Length: 178
Length: 194
Image 1: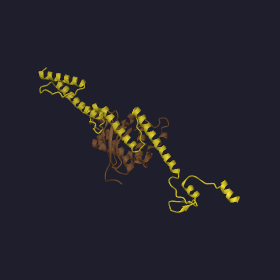
Image 2 (image 1 turned 60 degrees about the horizontal axis):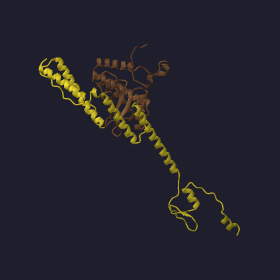
Image 3 (image 1 turned 135 degrees about the vertical axis):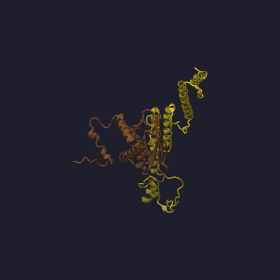
Image 4 (image 1 turned 45 degrees about the vertical axis):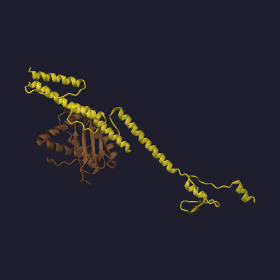
């Protein structure tokens, strides 16, 4: 038997059959435990590499999660308005957060949206530093999988900077993609 | 306490009284020779004053319906108003979507407003569905209108293609009416009792 660690590539089926595996505890858990994993992961990445690299890695992970989430959980054939409504409903029913669109331009694919009561930072102590790189990647991954165009997503306001809600600007990178 | 420090303390008290009565206030000057503790208090007060000014200016714009005024960044004094601003921006977007005929959006967790807004969108959506059904039903109903050219002798009717059709055929093609053929008493008399 070999102890070799093989390279890993995520597949949706790796999430497993949760109903089968957790017949008594079910499909939900404490937000604190989610945050415990996320922030200890950030701690290790930050210490091993640098704050910038940690942010980049978390963003990349969020991006992959967003893409897979979109392709496996959302109907990408819906028109934009229906897709946004569906995304809003799903994020709410899965208790990820309350997403609200503030501005949208279907021509230039430029969106401003807020996520309140989100998993990552709502209720965090105010440190003056935005912490939602994972969410930035997650939103970019969703929009990219839906539109087929690369997106840049940046968090404009964050709970951790005293803004009470997380506001993101998502813009399609012009001249790129299909 | 030095006279300049005493002046700073008096100024601080005045500023706090001004703020308590809803007036705006100027920053307090820090005297050159000043106790460190007092300096700390004045600096903290001035920082708070600056945050308060920013928040006031933002809230004044918000109160007049100006949502384009950006919320002051990193300002916790204005935090609840930033939340209100975000909600209003979202409602503005939602209303715009409804105006464009997008009834798929819903407002969540904004109290009674959510219920009223969502009821309104559902009612509008239902109204549009009803109107569409009526339009569809109306398109099924054909009617004869206007002046119909008819031959004064044989009673054939001239159609749009300039050809002449039997009266029954023309009416059947241009309305929901059908014909069943019979004989009226006059024709019966003329034809069979000569």
